[in-house]
Image 1 (cartoon, rainbow over the protein chains, first blue to last red):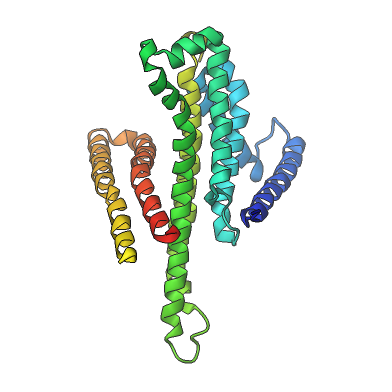
Image 2 (cartoon, chains in turn blue, orange):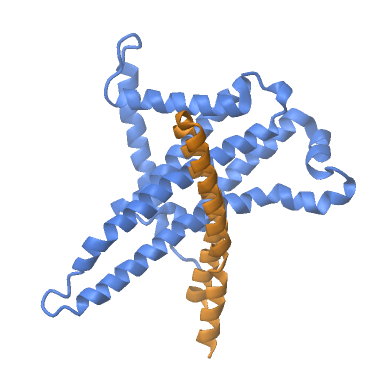
Length: 232
Length: 74
């Protein structure tokens, strides 16, 4: 009835790593002299914050960017770390549908909140549900809900396909190397075949999917803010 | 008998990859055209292209996911 899923450990692991990183980097930033040239990890943090600021201001305007930017940075760092954690032996958190649906739900709530805030309740019903005529209500309800499904399944599908292909490769190389008589117990073929697969599916696709998820969130928030409310 | 039908169903689900490949090819063509016309916009075009490729890939990934689920769950 109640099944314990191994992703819980990796979720805690990723959270712990990010917390430690935040504490260490935060201490460094606090000590850093704002007028001197930044060095080491501080440069990395400056570049990252500048990148996030530019991305959000371009899409949502200056006023909303102040509230949106921290969420965007959090989600990018979290998904990136979660996807990459596969190569360190964690069971990637994002290959559990519950995790990706939770992430998509948070983003979706922000989309709905943005529309409500800028249009009011009547404006929300008029602009989201009764567009262009009242007959389209069922279609519009589906289109309001669909971002949850599409965003979560896109992330989940990419990561789980990498995980499954990795598992298949390990099983196959294990079978091949078991045919070798003396040292067959040691899966040495995987040492040759697996690294490129980990590089592509964990590092490359993981990074791209993290980027796509954050970009989608920013763009969807941006399209829901009316042009008059944006000032660049 | 049943296993065979399941395998055929999985193979049919993996067919979504065909249109995904065509779409990704179109994206690649457009990106190469853009770079050859305007070599300075190299970096921007690459970022946009990778993003578009990731979107186009989604359909194929859904098919792959359904194929895996069909094979592993039943």
